[in-house]
Image 1 (cartoon, rainbow, N blue to C red):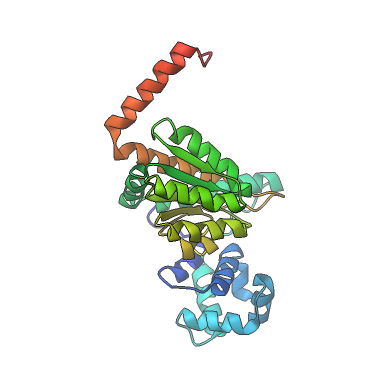
Image 2 (image 1 turned 120 degrees about the horizontal axis):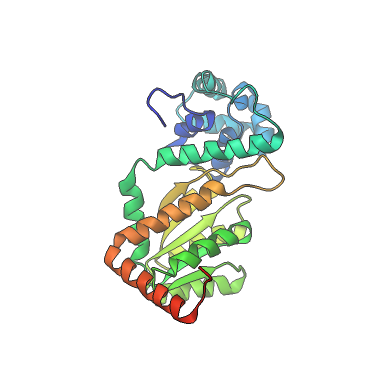
Length: 283
């Protein structure tokens, strides 16, 4: 974000929850506030409760957990945060253009988060050192896990995609830990499959450190992850857009490559030699 720029409503509201330990119910409320900023600043506690699918007392307790006397005080704070936030251009175009522009905004916010290069670099070193490296993605997150793993396998000796749930998932997590894995990369995206969160708990029980790429700093993944890397999901179309999470995945892969440049170069050269010998590509 450029100096002097007005932060987007979602960024302003997300800042309220940084460093605050929230219960699962409170995370649902926080996620609701982020998703519906700035309009939520003008809703009653009962309306917020209905929107988040929780009880009205839960909304009040949530406000107190953030350091306010009650929900009215929180609502005043929300109005302060979003009063000067831009709602977008006056002529935003049709609904398809609006969806694409919203993704541009998601990418812009992601770029701002990446100003802290050391955090990404440290996470890259953690994942690069994990041998094997399990990569978890269930349901809607499965294609992202496969996409990341396809490229990661070119620079990492043992990448294991975990894209099927069921009883075998825990077996595969335990097998990865027994084989020497130290970390798990998990893609946790709406609608947050229950099996994914169960798998994160199992991974930590097996001694793995969990790195989660998820859509919000208050998503359900935060309770079960050691490192949370948020990237917003576009929700303007019938099905979600995952542009920012996929971009973040490739940024993280770059950090893995940077963790050991010499080994990365050696592995890439070996792959290119093999590809040329087998004539894998036309160009």
